[in-house]
Image 1 (cartoon, rainbow, N blue to C red):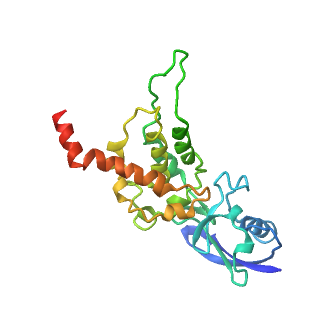
Image 2 (cartoon, rainbow, N blue to C red):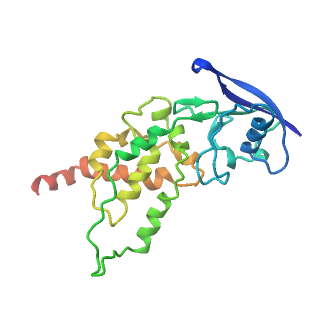
Image 3 (cartoon, rainbow, N blue to C red):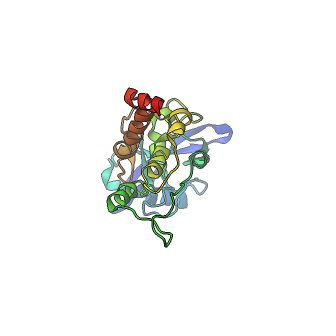
Length: 245
């Protein structure tokens, strides 16, 4: 069976257009397989980023039929192959070439978040003690593969371009991972409120919807952080107690 793939191809000067390629497909193939076949047989200059082909490195992020997804985890059997399969680069980040975007902004953002600062050890042997429920809670946050699909779909970044003001759901998740660790003593709430502008997020859950690791980014990271910011800076009882202290 042949299927048509409509891929974004760059042109000199920053312009580009969708180009159709027809290629044979078979049972079990994913979108990345088809893109590789097109690259091997029809478009050797096609730029595409990938690495593990197992949904764990986050490299092959793209927009497939308008939805941010991993190419290696999108099976052709889940798509309507009677229509062209449209594959485009992520729109939130600058385009490098074809399906490859420059995601380096994310790594710069990560450096602005206060690092893990552990409390003093609990035991004479220099080790710490943690309840299993605390370990389980932060373990979900650590599943992130940094595919940046949540960043791509976030309307604050995608539609409004607030890259200089908002860190996005991936790094709100990272901040939650640190803030909810009972061993950590750093205070990131001022930064979350004033520097990282957590208030920009209106919890639409679009980031949760595209996460390939099925992390509940909104419910288990962003909302708890928002609650902490509200308790610290906006709750009248807390503010009154702080004045007396």
